[in-house]
Image 1 (tube, rainbow, N blue to C red):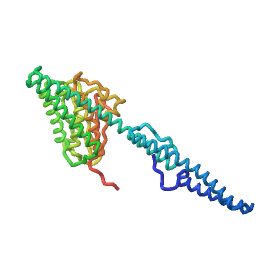
Image 2: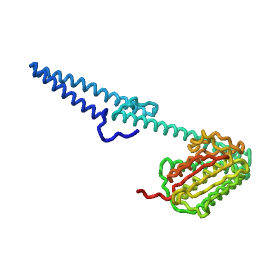
Image 3: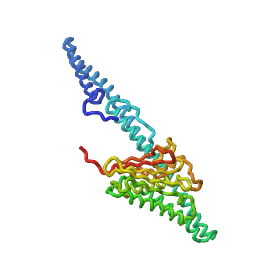
Image 4: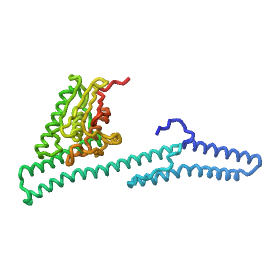
Length: 358
């Protein structure tokens, strides 16, 4: 909605009140002239003038107070948690119409926030319930003597504990996202050694999870990670910690959707601006349907793509890509699903060094 300018609008409240004053003056003047010509007593003219002015004022006032009463009722419903009601006067071409549109937009925003809050509580409860139930079952079996506290049992318990830890870390990142408390600490760095470190950490994390939990499919140590940086001396300007979140989450998502013994490629190229960066993460999985591409970066979205490595795999929390988008947005960059002949290609562009304006 475009904000009205400082000038007087033809249908504004000021214009209506001004018209009311002008009409009242004309009526009074006209009646006074009639009185002078017909020699009517002034008191009758005064009574007629007052009655006419009151009738016109009542007509104008009703057009102003009726929508205000409706807005008050809608605002009261919103304050009680009912975000379904809307003000009907949003089509008016005056200040009350602007106010009605603002109240309706506020109700839409509050309804979206309330819906996201309920989804967050439901999804977090679901994510916490699974590892807690598994951990409880393992410990109850040990306490009841059903199973012994052997290394395999302890590895199972450790697996669920680590899953809880990862979920808590992800939720903390999500809390920082909502609170807007994260500031960028951008600096110049060499891309090749930086991304090599991220890929090495991803391999070590997968190996550690496999050792601590047995031979589960979720570890995906069979997927090969490949790095392609050109030119090799490429440098970029970004927040290293936030960029780590982006790359790590994109790699994690690509690995989960890769076929057995698949390949995930992290590609880095120079962007159009000084120290800007173009990143792509490619996998050989089933890809993302075009109808789902606008939703993959939403929170708790797992999409409708079947996992290529069979049942029992860890589909994740559905927060990784949402956090990646948040970190990219902090940089003022862009992230999206690019066209790919095979698998999925996520493309990230970071603007590099901010350019002076003017």
